[in-house]
Length: 283
Image (cartoon, rainbow, N blue to C red):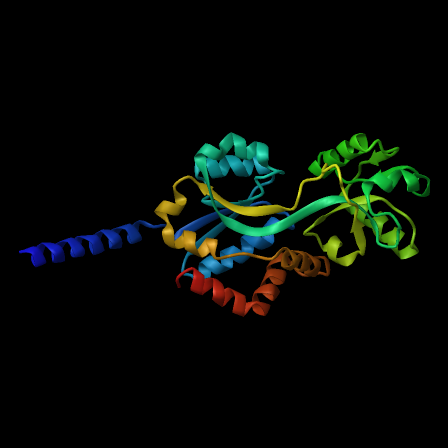
């Protein structure tokens, strides 16, 4: 009788496990933003999930606020986010309905830069070369977080500079022109960006800590996703894309490839790594 009951219990456990597995999602909805840092991670993860047998729907949102709202409602299952600085306010507002799944990449960094042929190494030295650059820091779009951080740096370091807003394209044009002429310029940059790989620049040291430390990219899901979708969770958690690889993908795009072509180029060159992910994900 004891053996019969034990056998029955094992059978029920197996049956329950099979029902639980059957209840897991076979279609995963990924949300993303059409930006050069998060799209490569999103598309690489999409390809890996499809390799593991899932159907993936990828939706892009125009800004973080809309993306967070969609994730919190469950309109999408997963998004790549930086929650420790850039989107901290959105995370604080929604975190009770969300959960961290895994780290997808690490090292997002931004700050004030100068060409590497300029002699200064720290933000504290900027006033010493202000006349060489007309007292201007060449900026990007006025609403960017990097612009606000740079404005804070001007105040905290008592810099005798004006922050010039404009566009990323205009900033890139001025930076490239200055480097070609070996002329002095002070501007801003971030990694991962194709510009960071193409232009030889120096991030100025920030002893006051105005700019955030290197940040991680997290896969975030609606609360309960990992528990309800263990196999998908293991697949997603196996994916980690080095920041330099994201930068290289964006350089390929700047050289004329589409995002899909650049991601495929990376995929074809990293089959060993992808196979390691498959082992870690259990399939």
